[in-house]
Structures are given as structure tokens and as C-alpha cells.
Image (cartoon, rainbow, N blue to C red):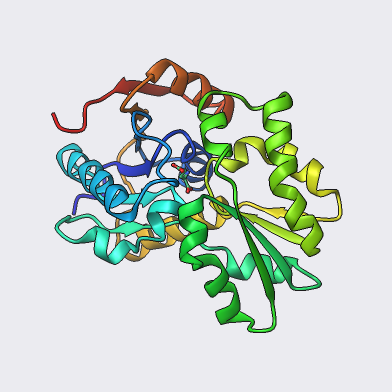
Amino acid sequence: MNRDLPVGVIDSGVGGLSVLKCLRQALPDEQFIYIGDTARTPYGSRSEAEVRAFVEEILCWLDAQQIKMAVIACNTITVLGTTTLQQGHDFPLVGMSKGETLVLRASENKKIGVMATPFTVSTQAHKKAILAQNPLAQVYAQACPDFVPLIEREILSGPDIQQAVAKYAKPLKDFGADTVILSCTHYPFIKNIISKELGTEVKVIDPAEETAAIVKQQLKDKGLLRTAAAADSIICSTADINRVRRLAEYMLPQGDYIYRQVNLTE
Ligand code: DGL
């Protein structure tokens, strides 16, 4: 594997840009190829078979781009299991951290909230990871199906997003969570609204930074850290590249990117 190849970054839409931000910070010399399947987002309200088929198309497209590693910057895809997704592809896959160590360290009362897509919540992956580390912890996972469609439509403030945040925050407040993890990579786009609604005493954790640190370690361990001069990263989407560019400029105010709308089957 050539260490000067780019690193692929995958999401169902624009959510993974919040992870790309941390990846760029942790790995400033790497080149990234981001691919968001905006034509078919959201994945989190779809069946497992459908999501698996879409992800396989993305991974085959990345095969053709020639990458040295793919970061699954999406919890909904990560919970399918990187080992099964990896089959048939030469590059290693790194998924989102479930953040169990982070939340258990941050939480005083060990009452932890998880905000995620309906699919991610249905797998109980985050709850299981937290309980495996501390069986006495209590975990309440809240599915937030309205968030991704609103964020994809660039609705990052105003009454619609406020109402949705209030609706999903209420059960977590009633439960008494003192720490809430954002287990969908879209949610950091509205982290300030979520934090405000949950209240200043509730810690809101985004596992993107930890994920970027894991990616860095894996590249190091595999001898794959880039040696060539940094090249511009590329942001691709399967639809609405201008909308993706606006959301990327919001999430990634620094840095030059090349934008491309792509057809996965070409
Ligand atoms: N950003 C994604 C995640 O982390 C998926 C959102 C979706 O497509 O529903 O789960």
C-alpha cells in the first residue's frame, strides 16, 4: 500500500464533514477524499440491507479512486460492523468511536444519554459498549429522525430545528442524563442548540476527535503516514454539490477543497 495515497472519508451526506474537520486537524499533511451520498440520505431511517448495498457501492467507487484507508464517518454505517463491510476491499476501514470511555469519564452520575439515528439506536451498539465497560451505568438512547433531513436542508437555526431539539432533549432530561453523546456525525452541526436545550450542567460529547486520533494511530501503526507534500483534499457528493459546498464552508471554514458531484456507478 502506497503511503502517499489519499484517505477516503464516507458518510450518507454532509455529517461526516464534522469528522473531516477533526481529521484535518489531527493529520494536516494527509489528502482526503470525502464522499457523501446526498442523493440517498438519510441512511438512518432505512433497512440494513439497503444501507449495506449503498455502502458497497461507495466502497467500490473508492476502490477506483485508489485510497490507502477509508474512515467511516457515520455511526449508522459503523454499527453494521467494519469487518463485514471491508470484505472484498484492499484498504482498511476505520469506523466511528462509540465514545464509551469518553462518556464514562465525563459522567458523574453514570446516567448517559445517546442521540443517534433510528437505525443506530435499534442496534443498541452504544448502550452495549458503555455497559460492557461499566455494567452499573444507565443508558437512555434517543432516536432523532428529524435532525438529519433538517441539517441536510441547511436548517441549522430557527423554529423547526429548535422544536426538534426540544422534542428529543425532553426524554433525556427526564431521564436525568448528565452526559449526552452525539452518536450521529450530522449532529455536531447543531451542537450549540442541543447543549443549550439540555442545559449547561449536561456535558455534550462528540466522538469525532477521538476517532481522528484512532485513524492517526492506525496510519502510524501500518506505516501509512504520508511523506509527499500535502495536496488539496476533495469533497464529493452524489447530489447537490453547491449545497454540500455551503455546508462544508460552514463546518470547515479554513482550507482549500476541490468540489465534485459524482455518479457512484461510473
Ligand atoms: N451521519 C450519519 C451517522 O452518523 C447518518 C445519518 C443518516 O443518514 O441518517 O449516523
